[in-house]
Length: 51
Image (cartoon, rainbow, N blue to C red; front, side, top):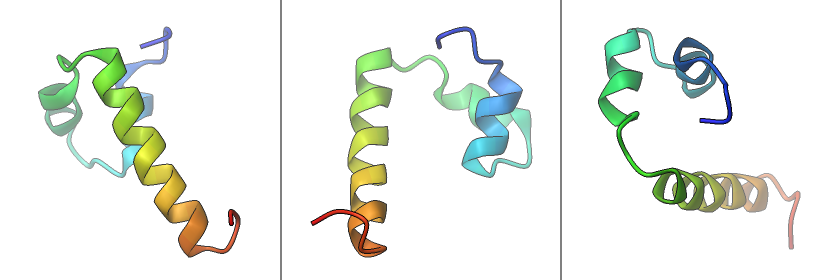
């Protein structure tokens, strides 16, 4: 996870409990990266930041 603490990732994702973040921490980095890219792209487009 690029040396980012799990608690930090959880806060960025809005997780209240660290257990919620830990539940997904086992997923492969490429799966997480792909999902993050898709979600952030959709959000950016919805906000009009990307054509």
